[in-house]
Length: 213
Image (tube, rainbow, N blue to C red; front, side, top):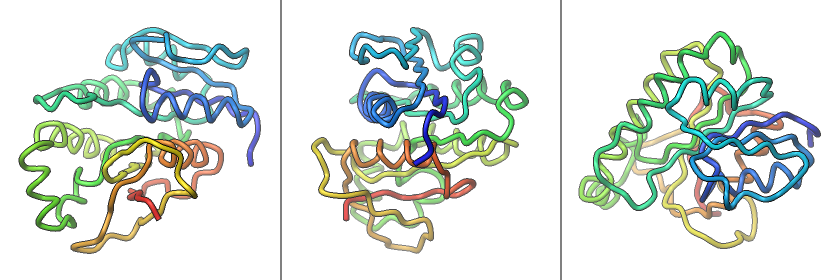
Protein backbone atom coordinates (compact mmCIF):
# COMPACT_ATOMS: atom_id res chain seq x y z
CA UNK A 1 0.00 0.00 0.00
CA UNK A 2 1.27 3.47 -0.87
CA UNK A 3 1.46 5.55 2.29
CA UNK A 4 1.07 9.23 3.01
CA UNK A 5 -0.61 10.49 -0.13
CA UNK A 6 -2.49 13.78 -0.25
CA UNK A 7 -6.02 12.77 -1.22
CA UNK A 8 -8.78 15.31 -1.87
CA UNK A 9 -12.39 14.16 -1.68
CA UNK A 10 -15.15 16.25 -3.25
CA UNK A 11 -18.55 15.52 -1.71
CA UNK A 12 -17.56 13.95 1.60
CA UNK A 13 -20.40 14.70 3.99
CA UNK A 14 -22.26 11.40 3.57
CA UNK A 15 -22.37 8.05 1.80
CA UNK A 16 -19.38 6.86 -0.20
CA UNK A 17 -17.52 10.15 0.24
CA UNK A 18 -17.69 10.04 4.03
CA UNK A 19 -16.51 6.42 3.98
CA UNK A 20 -13.65 7.33 1.62
CA UNK A 21 -12.55 9.99 4.10
CA UNK A 22 -12.51 7.57 7.02
CA UNK A 23 -10.73 4.82 5.07
CA UNK A 24 -8.09 7.17 3.68
CA UNK A 25 -7.32 8.48 7.17
CA UNK A 26 -7.14 4.94 8.56
CA UNK A 27 -4.63 4.07 5.82
CA UNK A 28 -2.32 6.91 6.78
CA UNK A 29 -3.11 9.52 4.13
CA UNK A 30 -3.46 13.28 4.39
CA UNK A 31 -7.04 14.08 3.46
CA UNK A 32 -8.73 17.28 2.32
CA UNK A 33 -12.50 17.24 1.94
CA UNK A 34 -14.92 19.67 0.34
CA UNK A 35 -18.59 19.49 1.25
CA UNK A 36 -21.48 21.72 2.23
CA UNK A 37 -21.49 20.20 5.72
CA UNK A 38 -18.54 19.03 7.81
CA UNK A 39 -20.46 17.90 10.88
CA UNK A 40 -20.17 14.15 10.26
CA UNK A 41 -16.51 14.12 9.31
CA UNK A 42 -14.13 12.64 11.89
CA UNK A 43 -11.78 14.79 13.94
CA UNK A 44 -8.29 13.83 12.86
CA UNK A 45 -4.93 15.62 12.67
CA UNK A 46 -4.53 14.55 9.02
CA UNK A 47 -7.93 15.88 7.95
CA UNK A 48 -8.55 19.33 6.52
CA UNK A 49 -12.32 19.68 6.19
CA UNK A 50 -13.42 22.56 3.97
CA UNK A 51 -16.99 23.79 3.87
CA UNK A 52 -17.98 24.90 0.40
CA UNK A 53 -19.50 24.00 -2.96
CA UNK A 54 -18.19 21.57 -5.56
CA UNK A 55 -19.52 23.87 -8.27
CA UNK A 56 -17.61 26.92 -7.02
CA UNK A 57 -14.27 27.34 -8.79
CA UNK A 58 -12.51 28.99 -5.84
CA UNK A 59 -13.67 26.27 -3.42
CA UNK A 60 -12.67 23.54 -5.84
CA UNK A 61 -9.23 25.07 -6.41
CA UNK A 62 -8.66 25.35 -2.67
CA UNK A 63 -9.68 21.74 -2.06
CA UNK A 64 -7.60 20.24 -4.87
CA UNK A 65 -4.40 22.24 -4.41
CA UNK A 66 -1.45 19.94 -3.76
CA UNK A 67 -3.47 16.74 -4.16
CA UNK A 68 -1.86 13.49 -5.31
CA UNK A 69 -5.31 12.13 -6.21
CA UNK A 70 -8.81 13.57 -6.43
CA UNK A 71 -11.89 11.52 -5.54
CA UNK A 72 -15.30 12.84 -6.60
CA UNK A 73 -18.27 11.35 -4.77
CA UNK A 74 -21.05 13.85 -5.44
CA UNK A 75 -24.63 12.72 -5.02
CA UNK A 76 -28.19 13.99 -4.90
CA UNK A 77 -29.37 11.66 -2.13
CA UNK A 78 -32.97 10.60 -2.59
CA UNK A 79 -33.77 13.54 -4.86
CA UNK A 80 -34.64 12.21 -8.35
CA UNK A 81 -35.61 15.54 -9.92
CA UNK A 82 -33.63 16.91 -12.90
CA UNK A 83 -30.31 18.34 -11.76
CA UNK A 84 -27.36 20.26 -13.15
CA UNK A 85 -25.08 19.37 -10.22
CA UNK A 86 -22.76 17.11 -12.18
CA UNK A 87 -22.32 19.33 -15.21
CA UNK A 88 -21.96 22.46 -13.08
CA UNK A 89 -19.19 20.66 -11.20
CA UNK A 90 -17.67 19.51 -14.48
CA UNK A 91 -17.50 23.03 -15.86
CA UNK A 92 -15.69 24.25 -12.74
CA UNK A 93 -13.34 21.26 -12.77
CA UNK A 94 -12.37 21.76 -16.40
CA UNK A 95 -11.11 25.23 -15.56
CA UNK A 96 -8.52 23.51 -13.33
CA UNK A 97 -7.16 21.12 -15.95
CA UNK A 98 -3.73 22.74 -16.06
CA UNK A 99 -3.44 22.90 -12.27
CA UNK A 100 -4.51 19.27 -11.81
CA UNK A 101 -2.16 17.96 -14.47
CA UNK A 102 -2.12 14.16 -14.60
CA UNK A 103 -3.07 13.27 -11.04
CA UNK A 104 -5.67 10.46 -10.87
CA UNK A 105 -9.23 11.84 -11.01
CA UNK A 106 -11.51 9.09 -9.72
CA UNK A 107 -15.17 9.96 -10.26
CA UNK A 108 -18.16 8.07 -8.88
CA UNK A 109 -21.09 7.89 -11.32
CA UNK A 110 -23.05 4.65 -11.66
CA UNK A 111 -23.75 1.69 -13.91
CA UNK A 112 -26.38 3.02 -16.27
CA UNK A 113 -24.53 6.25 -17.05
CA UNK A 114 -23.05 6.93 -20.46
CA UNK A 115 -22.33 3.94 -22.68
CA UNK A 116 -23.08 1.46 -19.88
CA UNK A 117 -26.82 2.07 -20.35
CA UNK A 118 -26.69 0.02 -23.55
CA UNK A 119 -25.39 -2.96 -21.56
CA UNK A 120 -28.25 -3.06 -19.05
CA UNK A 121 -30.86 -5.77 -19.11
CA UNK A 122 -34.54 -4.90 -19.82
CA UNK A 123 -35.59 -4.74 -16.14
CA UNK A 124 -32.72 -2.42 -15.25
CA UNK A 125 -33.51 -0.19 -18.22
CA UNK A 126 -37.16 0.05 -17.11
CA UNK A 127 -36.16 0.88 -13.54
CA UNK A 128 -33.82 3.63 -14.72
CA UNK A 129 -36.41 5.06 -17.09
CA UNK A 130 -39.00 5.24 -14.30
CA UNK A 131 -36.88 6.47 -11.41
CA UNK A 132 -33.35 7.59 -12.33
CA UNK A 133 -33.44 8.95 -15.86
CA UNK A 134 -33.14 12.65 -14.96
CA UNK A 135 -30.22 12.25 -12.55
CA UNK A 136 -28.36 9.81 -14.78
CA UNK A 137 -28.76 12.04 -17.81
CA UNK A 138 -26.70 14.68 -16.01
CA UNK A 139 -24.17 12.08 -14.81
CA UNK A 140 -23.79 10.97 -18.43
CA UNK A 141 -23.10 14.55 -19.51
CA UNK A 142 -20.37 14.82 -16.88
CA UNK A 143 -18.81 11.57 -18.08
CA UNK A 144 -18.73 12.89 -21.65
CA UNK A 145 -17.11 16.13 -20.49
CA UNK A 146 -14.35 14.21 -18.70
CA UNK A 147 -13.75 11.87 -21.63
CA UNK A 148 -13.18 14.86 -23.90
CA UNK A 149 -10.80 16.50 -21.41
CA UNK A 150 -7.07 16.15 -20.86
CA UNK A 151 -7.64 14.98 -17.28
CA UNK A 152 -6.43 11.59 -16.05
CA UNK A 153 -9.92 10.32 -15.31
CA UNK A 154 -11.47 7.07 -14.10
CA UNK A 155 -15.26 6.56 -14.03
CA UNK A 156 -16.37 4.29 -11.20
CA UNK A 157 -19.79 2.78 -11.96
CA UNK A 158 -21.30 0.80 -9.10
CA UNK A 159 -24.61 -0.98 -9.24
CA UNK A 160 -27.33 -0.21 -6.68
CA UNK A 161 -25.64 1.06 -3.52
CA UNK A 162 -26.38 -0.64 -0.20
CA UNK A 163 -25.21 -0.28 3.39
CA UNK A 164 -23.32 -2.79 5.50
CA UNK A 165 -19.88 -4.35 5.72
CA UNK A 166 -19.17 -6.56 2.68
CA UNK A 167 -17.39 -9.90 3.14
CA UNK A 168 -14.75 -8.98 0.59
CA UNK A 169 -13.78 -6.55 -2.16
CA UNK A 170 -16.18 -5.53 -4.89
CA UNK A 171 -16.36 -7.46 -8.14
CA UNK A 172 -14.83 -5.28 -10.86
CA UNK A 173 -15.83 -5.49 -14.54
CA UNK A 174 -14.06 -3.13 -16.91
CA UNK A 175 -14.88 -4.96 -20.16
CA UNK A 176 -18.53 -4.47 -21.03
CA UNK A 177 -20.97 -6.63 -22.93
CA UNK A 178 -24.69 -6.47 -23.56
CA UNK A 179 -26.77 -7.86 -20.70
CA UNK A 180 -23.86 -8.03 -18.27
CA UNK A 181 -24.84 -8.50 -14.64
CA UNK A 182 -23.99 -5.60 -12.35
CA UNK A 183 -25.93 -6.05 -9.14
CA UNK A 184 -25.93 -4.20 -5.86
CA UNK A 185 -22.75 -3.33 -3.99
CA UNK A 186 -22.10 -1.83 -0.59
CA UNK A 187 -21.00 1.76 -0.22
CA UNK A 188 -18.12 0.52 1.92
CA UNK A 189 -16.81 -1.75 -0.85
CA UNK A 190 -17.01 1.12 -3.33
CA UNK A 191 -15.18 3.47 -0.95
CA UNK A 192 -12.42 0.92 -0.39
CA UNK A 193 -12.01 0.49 -4.14
CA UNK A 194 -11.77 4.23 -4.72
CA UNK A 195 -9.17 4.79 -2.00
CA UNK A 196 -7.12 1.84 -3.27
CA UNK A 197 -7.25 3.33 -6.76
CA UNK A 198 -6.06 6.66 -5.36
CA UNK A 199 -3.08 4.81 -3.88
CA UNK A 200 -2.28 2.77 -6.96
CA UNK A 201 -4.53 3.43 -9.96
CA UNK A 202 -5.03 0.55 -12.37
CA UNK A 203 -8.14 1.66 -14.30
CA UNK A 204 -7.22 5.10 -15.60
CA UNK A 205 -9.20 6.10 -18.70
CA UNK A 206 -11.48 3.14 -18.04
CA UNK A 207 -14.92 2.70 -16.51
CA UNK A 208 -14.90 -0.10 -13.92
CA UNK A 209 -18.35 -1.39 -12.97
CA UNK A 210 -18.64 -2.57 -9.36
CA UNK A 211 -20.96 -5.11 -7.79
CA UNK A 212 -20.93 -7.56 -4.91
CA UNK A 213 -19.12 -10.84 -5.46
